[in-house]
Image 1 (cartoon, one colour):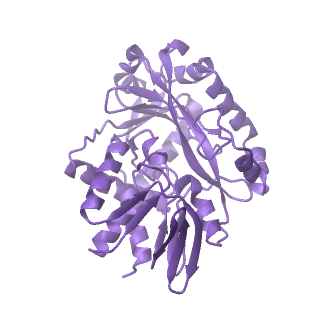
Image 2 (cartoon, one colour):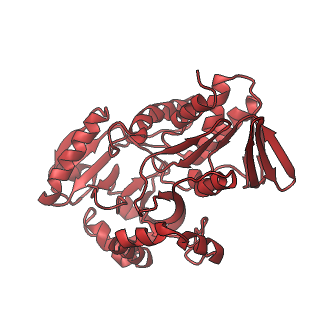
Image 3 (spheres, helix red, strand yellow):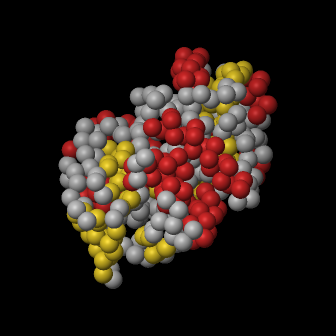
Length: 383
């Protein structure tokens, strides 16, 4: 939808049809995330994620406010639990400064306890540019805006074939075909499959990772006044335990990251033997397991045991117990994996004469959506 919006900015009156296999918008990653408007702290300077996150955040805030949606600038506290993490905290501050963040501040344990009542940690990094928003509401506002601009939505329409030719693109759908001069594919969990349907070798494979959340009890939630994140370990693929308030005043812990056995496997029991066989067919699966066996087992154990999760969380919020954690609705994120098993951590777009395929859009894709849309529109219609 962000790409369609920016295409109509560039070419007013352009005839656009937005196709989605679901009956409603934002039923997957766009509607199952933590609602964080990211600052751009973590990303490698010069990467697409770093460049588009900052620009996209400001565009998203402006869009939300223009549509009378609430944006709350709570700020984020990155907490070092021990002196061993201090060099990484310093490196993180340097990276944030290189990415143009303002207001970054090193804080001590007393300042941590001011923002997290009785919070743990020896030092922290305060990131004031982090905010929260309701991305489901953003998606609905985008749909309304697009419909007002004449964009046609064909929901409940699954694409089963793609053919690029000299005269444009033909999409095969359940009730016939759709013809267009240009195609933009933003298919999330299905992104590599759509590119494959068109005959392209993506050079990556999408693996679905289910992210489980816990909602904190009201008493525990009252202790958390901002977002709380760990110091990331550059050797590990995921951030680990963190705390995120939402606009309703609730506080959520998570998400963790467990390999799902279905591309849309929101429940532990969701499994597709066909999809599982497809995931295991190739070097990616085995190389991924070889690289991250210990990390993966730890994520699985925390997913199964609220006591284990509470112990991890208690390092940042001392005294929290398993009965302070209420299981909440999970999400599934699309993670692109290279043949050698590495997790691809930047946006990846494939551009052909008649199409743009977004092959990988990890966090902060929601934050940066409008800026990514600008990039897509410029590739569809250069100049």
